[in-house]
Image (cartoon, rainbow, N blue to C red; front, side, top):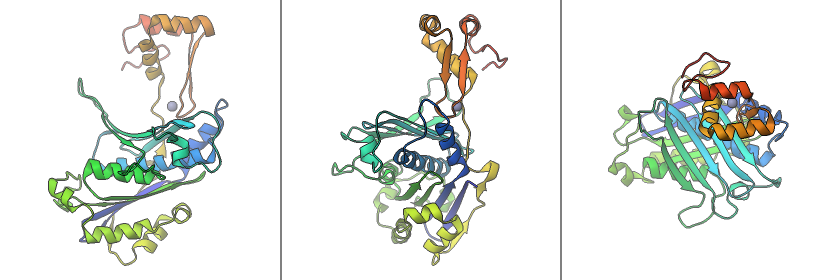
Length: 328
Ligand SMILES: [Zn+2]
């Protein structure tokens, strides 16, 4: 069962969140494995994508935001793009495009940062965009302050969260072919517990690294090993790490309210994409292939448009999609 638990450290300016994805993560891997063109992910790619999926879930749950949180890595190694998306209801999807061989021992830098040109982008895309409104995007390099290449995704994201939110954050991430999991510990803004949405102030910046309670809890969190995070259940992990702390627990999010796989692709969206290609381009593809076929990288769904469908896309009013009565 995939689940997300949120907790506060009683009386201390620190909050935490832990996620464990099994069914949701296994479904993402199974759909990829069923794709006859790509086949399954090599284990190091699955590990990276699983960590990204766990991190995207934690980051989405950690903010008050109505829209998609999209975590992307644009790589300069065999992994060209890796994407993990989390919605406010914790539905998730993820995919990666891989070119060439991946060594069995490849780490983050070998996968996406061979020439130090890899970068990580975090996008917040509002569900209902106002006219002219652009999604918010933050981009971080995959190297640290002294130019050293970062070996772990958690280091990259901690760096990003410290810079963007001015709040100390500790992340522990792990994934294999069964489980993707993560633990997030964050110092609360000085405004206190009344302000969980977390609008940090200049004073928060002064506090970075200086809160003793946060530092102690962060050290405990960092002692969690990959093997423990992957193999132990959430109750055992929290008890082992924080048995001397007083935790205030919130109701876990699991089952249909918890993290789960869902794809947001649709025939309508593919039709809009074909419309944006333009009539000429679409006709060229039809002439060459007899139909336009688009596969969703996230879920494997194939969408097919023959000459008649395609003519309707360009003939009908915008939003009218052949084979569907839905008007956007
Ligand atoms: Zn899809």
